[in-house]
Length: 282
Image (tube, rainbow, N blue to C red; front, top):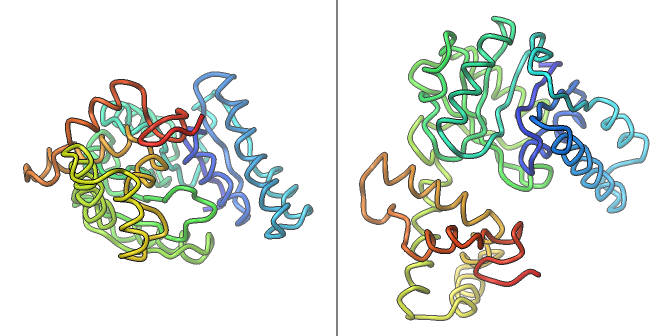
């Protein structure tokens, strides 16, 4: 696991690249355009600089980590990767296309992992000729801060591949690793998404204001942030996709995305990253 590839340099991809580089791995990040590559580099540099400013990382270690990260537009350079983590948008067709391409490029011994938060891993595994080496590795945002990673085995995943990823996440990255079966939502989102969508329905019905819903769950349940603030932080589009994946898998009413959530995504109100969601961040 010394040579790691990351597909996508967005918020999640940049975070995964950072933690892998800080752990000593040589990291190559794949982007589709130079402007996206420049943005990915800036994200990593900004995050590592915050760590130095907060006293969590020495300048020497920060410089060493940055030296281990390179952003490329050429997928062919992934040929020598021991592990590739896909961190593309949460759209099944995009992910399966990426895995089919990676399967052609990455060395046969390379493990292909998906950072999907809700799509069954078997979907990506079946897009390759190496389903035994396809694993789910679900990091949480912000990756450098959040300790948990879910390691998911599909029905086709070889135990050795899952064990290798679990060991890397736990012992090299220093994360809290848990194993999960290959159901939509895995552990965390299978429990979290119904809670979040219930909060949206409560707001939609006029039963309580967004401020009171969030304050109640913080003060009454001890959560660090309320459900609507959390959706804004995660992204309304990501929450919608996760809810839809769960509903597609189980067809249970409490998984169905609320109409209000759909309309807000249609309106581009995606949360903090867009400047407006349930709250205004402009």
